Length: 184
Image 1 (cartoon, rainbow, N blue to C red):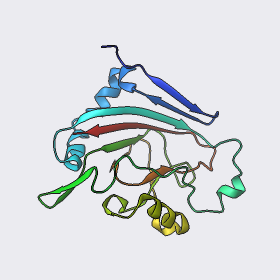
Image 2: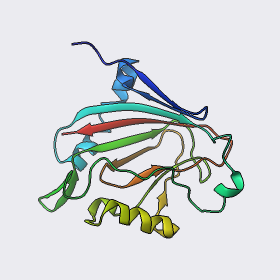
Image 3: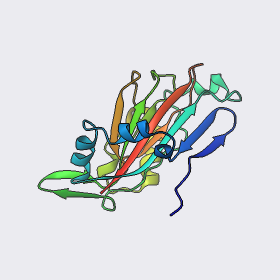
Image 4: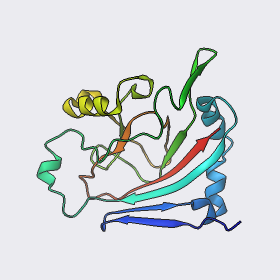
C-alpha cells in the first residue's frame, strides 16, 4: 500500500491545516499514543481505540477581518460542526455515556479570549434536537456557548458529537494546535 502523505490546506494567508502528521515525524505518533492520553480517550469511547487522524492548525487573524465587527459579539464562531451526533455515534453502557469518535486538541500556544479558542455548545452531544436548531439557538444567545482558553501544553478532549467551532482571532497572536482523532 502506498503511504498517505502529509497534506496541506490553506485558507487565505491566515489559516493552514496540515494532515497525516504521523507520516511527518515519529514524535507526533508518540504524542498521539501517549500513555496518559490514550486511557482518557478510551474511557470516552468505551474501549480500545485506534488513531484515525492527526492534524495541526496554524492560524492568525484574517487581515481582511473587520476588528470592530469582531468585537460586537462575545464569541465569533467560524463554523459550528460535529463529526457524529447523539444516537448515531454515541451510546450508553453501564450508565456511562460514550462517543465513538473522540478528538484531542493540544494547544502549542497560549489561547486567551481573543486568540481563536475552540468554542462548544455544552450538552449538544446529548441532545436529540437538530444540529441546525442548536446552532441557531447558540448564535442567538452567547450564554449557550463556551469558549476554551488554555495555556500552551494543555489538552482539550471531547467527543465529536459535541458541536464545536474555532472562533475568529481578534488578537495579533498566532494560534497553533495539534489534533488527534480516535475511533474504536
